[in-house]
Length: 194
Image (cartoon, rainbow, N blue to C red; front, side):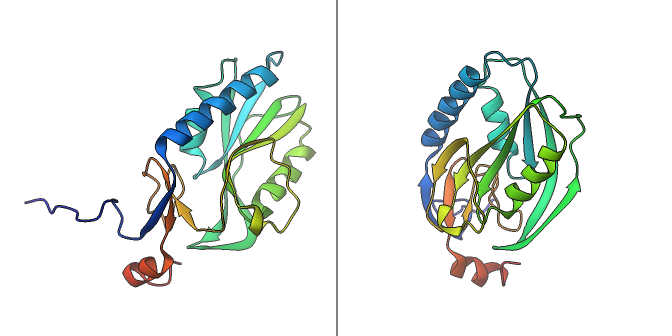
């Protein structure tokens, strides 16, 4: 017999919901409309997502862009558990030659900024026609480098968050909203969080 989950959330380490599913849907639609307007004359628009966290955001966003476009991905890593390592590793590069493309680099969250800063620098060397940054979330209080976000969903306080593609040790990606992790509960349930 299936066990009934007593928590109002599917994970016992959720602290609170910060951004609802409805708020996300509305903001993604607004971002899609803005990108559609900004790139109305572009014939080479590419959304370049940073795996794995950006997948949900990117796929919803592209459905709100009313322009010819394509997408590609890069797999990069800088997190272990709840902490950013500060070291950015490119595990898989994009496939499309971005020379002379209008590229929008899509990420789930800007934390220290190291990841997006490193990837942006690499992409600029590949001579796109333009390069802009789109992020669902920004933790401005944690920035270690100066980052200009051209298309931003939400600025959030310095919480570790999951949902809508974001995870902690691969848990929580499937939530339709953005929720803060209660790190004490998480560590009690799973150990250190690494």
